[in-house]
Image 1 (cartoon, rainbow, N blue to C red):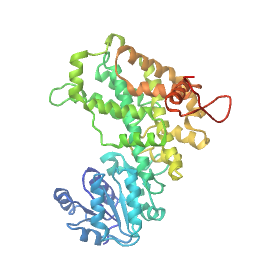
Image 2 (image 1 turned 180 degrees about the vertical axis):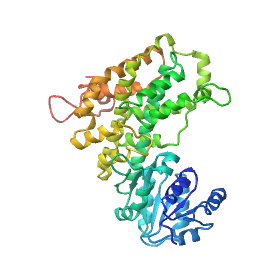
Image 3 (image 1 turned 30 degrees about the vertical axis):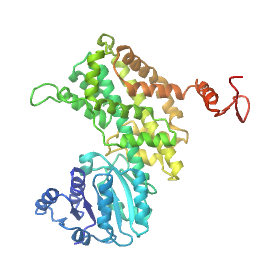
Image 4 (image 1 turned 45 degrees about the horizontal axis):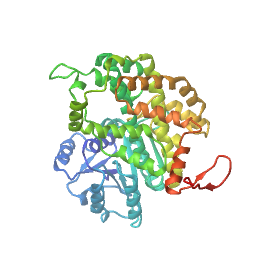
Length: 462
């Protein structure tokens, strides 16, 4: 029997996507360039006859029903191009390649254009949820030809998390849009993780990890309930099997990254969209990676932290997190909307939020009222009544937490940047009129006046 879909790349994500489909009685063909990955599936064939394991690309592709649908789960970058080159000659008109890895959206646009000339459809598809999401239901953001999406929709529906109202998959828009939205998803993920880490850093001078875990567990029963807060409480509760100490204390403070956060920052700078929370999160990961330099600097300067001043009022934690996490989502939505306009993608922000409601890493109870707010009015999220009420109520909590961090010398760049973003965004006028005057002074860049239309120049030395 021909398979409905073929998967190339059987690492943690590819393997679990295949198992997800197989357990729903959807015939799947699999192939890997890694012999060990192939062997693990050969061993599964006895229990799951719906698996077709091929040891050559020719056999793999010949096992697929028409139009052939090939899902790539390989490392983003040149590896994707190499696999495409290998299979392109074996595909026919209207066959479909689904790139489900974290490819850069501009690479996706390039590949879609190139393959279109051969009559092959290319769906750049963001998949979030990690290995567990791949196995039990992910958040799926597809971009590319609409007919190709329609031909593949039954597969996406099967792989997607069920969601509170609808399955968490959608056609985001034209080529590149799916991977762009997934990239911004990851940027938001960076921002929220940094905010939670900073909150933990502010609480730990006066609290044990178990006490902080209880704080996060309590927060998870509120509007802040989310996957990231839930796992934060669980991580802080975990004991090390080797030492019996809190496991998180045994883990190096060097936070790794794969680049999607940096791509988000670059895209935002190119489009002129402020996303300071995400910028701070990426910057702090870069600083964390410079462990030898930090250790050497600490030997010279000591620590700026004064734990006696880090007496955090726990009552501020809820409000500060609610305000800062809401603004992190708002920054991401603003970036997606700016890109949609720039690239003429016509992305629905409501559909994006709906897809993020379940399955993905940034799923959260907070997304339900955000979705409703976006449905109810066309105003930017930051000016909607619901957002305004939260910020007017809880911006003081964020200010207290950021002030405590500064006073105690505990680094909290995401919290402080988020507060500065809010303060700047509600300030009129900003002091940046001085900057424009300086630009005109040294570069003759001209300026606009408040009282007259047009561009003006001044001879500042006359």
